[in-house]
Amino acid sequence: MKIRRTIPPAAAPISARALLQGLTGLFPGRTNEEKLEQELKEYFGVRHLFLVSSGKAAFALILDALRSLAPGKRKVLIPAYTCFSVPSAIVKAGLEVSLSDVDQDTFDFDRSQLPRAIRRDTLCVVPTNLLGIPADLKRIRTLCRKKGVFLVEDAAQAMGGSYEGKLLGTIGDVGFFSLGRGKNITCGSGGIIVTNDDRIGAALRQRYAAIEQPRFFESVAAFLKALALALFIHPSQYWFPAGLPFLKLGETVFDPLFPVKRLSGMQAGLLQGWQQRLEESNRIRRANAEYFCHELGWELSKRYPVPFLRLPIIVASSTTRNTLRTLSWEQGLGLGRLYPTAIADIPELASCIGQEAFPGARTLAAGIVTVPTHQLLTPKDKQHIVALLRQVITEEDRSMMKDRPVQEQALPGRGKGWYQQQDHYV
Figure 1: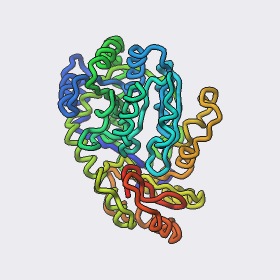
Figure 2: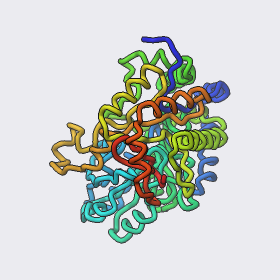
Figure 3: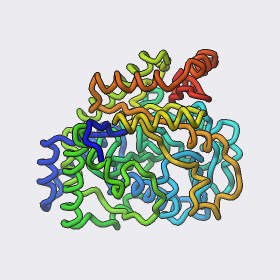
């Protein structure tokens, strides 16, 4: 364990004022929850909103509700490269994971494969707005309506982002967000479900009424975790938890054995001033992404300004990738990987996925490196990150990026050492 300034790959600070408000939520009464529900409904412009214990709990509850509206349909179609929590929730809901490959330029579903992947027993399609980058939701929504399947929008990493003038999470039939640590804003752990569909809203409300509130001791334990997060997330202190392997910080696991409960009053209290915090967080993330791209000669599309949860780079060279990660760790600069494998390579899912290759997902899993964008970065931190990227990414890599034709809905580049953004980066 080395005592040094260490930048977390992702971070969402919790203020002392929010911690104090969280303490008040440990005691009986629904003041915090009711206030938060109303504020969020107004912000998202939705008729139905539910607060639960995590993003994956939100997704599992959605799937249970949709299954009641379309009995007999059991397959949930997701990108072949996404967070492991997504298939975890599908298994938790007693449904089957179905995959469609991803486009290596956009991180979205592969355009040519998605229509063929939707079958008669498909319950819903779940595009992921990965790292805050909008999926091609207009096209996917049209396809879902044509095929007669639900569109569930995974906006776990995209709260506050927008697409064609609409807030992400509100474009599908139903959407969900995560309030976990490292998201745009956090209360330690939590999830939000939003929908304007009255049938889905009624099915969700029936199930929501049956799930329990966290017990007092669970809320106390969650508060202590949030307190630790608030103390140790800052780069001056993050070296300590980062140096404890048993904490498994940043590790992605497939685990369908998670609780589905309501958001506690304590957690609702921790979201004190959430809208201002969210807008400030997203403004800084956009600005930091623009800074990195400007300094490195990469262009960002202005069509969809993205509050990147982290800025993605794709490097096809294992040497470049490993050097970036090693030097970043030695210098405490916060560069990291995303998800370690494609969904098809999760051992617990081998029996239901089959032998399909999913080359796009496997390429991303092998090549992605992420750059921190959060508000805890100082100007010196950003300068050091730029210096590292300039040092490791070669002139040959840069020439490949310049030669690559611009695509309106693609990242700036892909391949050996190419920077790949995931939105409509050009």
